[in-house]
Image (cartoon, rainbow, N blue to C red; front, side, top):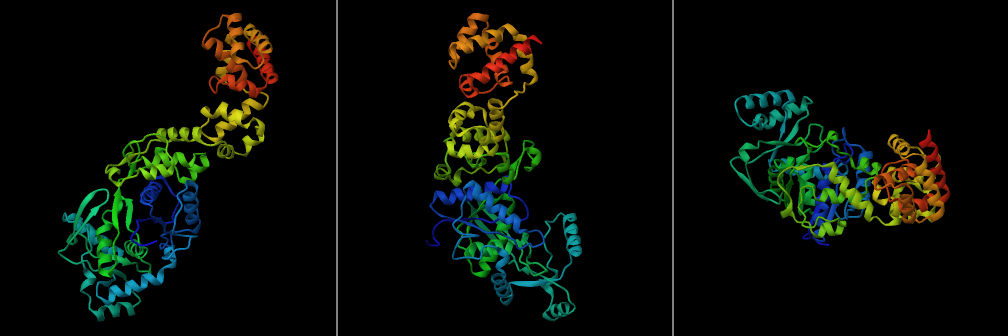
Length: 473
């Protein structure tokens, strides 16, 4: 494998659970890499030790594995550019800090947060964009040494060249242009000695051979800073593409009130990985083929030119559509495992396929499968209020005829209906609904012709006889 091959990366900070927005970024990066038979790299950016947690890092890896977004380089994988946890790359960053200082491309800054805040306020009041005023840039070497000897802990600021222009062709948004006079010198090392995001993120992309970076549009203004850094260090910058954000129905950033979930919550709720992938792949990317696609097919049709520049609206109903498609297309072995232990305890292996065939169109989540397994194989049957009303309105005579027709025709549902129709003169819903209500306790659901063999003639008879009693009470 050579560095000239396409290499993308996903570089999350383990400060919480992986959510839909970050997942889409990971997915687009994965799809783009796969579309070019490239390399997908996972890097954990955990330099902020006050907020990073190892459990969150492991959860991110678990979530990506659940979705099938496997990485070629990263934690748990051998690779030429490790370690892949930034907390283990401190020596690398220190070497580059030293290089910047030796070349006088960075300087110590002793400004306090209070001083910086006052400066920002005054700049905003004057109608100017807030940027560092350069106070510590003027310090002499002796002044710096004196402050260090007093125990002051400075940050390290990168010296942005004045009067220059940074230009790059964004993979999503097209040509971009930034004037360095509007950027201001920025912090590359915090006062506690840890590297700032701008620094280690850019350095690692270059050192790890990343060729294409896809990330959220909130990072767009970071890009000129990182390009300047890499140029100063003699490192090659990747190509950058900035993806528009995901919003809720009200146009505000996506949150739980819009129906958003963490990836772990989606998994726990019973969403299938292929459903999540099919939905998110289309959230901000246009596909000609709107049918359910495998991850490989989604990758083959992925093109950066089709990534939109405007925010994408998260639609829980669309996610549910792809969940239904995924359930319909799941193979029996995977579906049996997905339905859960409670269903497998109720439904025997011998009845598994017949159960699948009957209930699959009415199952979106494992809880739905458990609901129908309980209806079909457990006693006593619980009737909802609507079912009670329908049974009473049908009358005891209807169910007396139904019992006789069941005994006469056994599992032949079409013959049972024909017989019952002649005996009662019932048509349409008046014929179907009382049967469904008495046999399942529900007013809608799977095809009755497939349910009766699963119920068994004996259980169906008991339920119809119970309908006689309920209708007469």
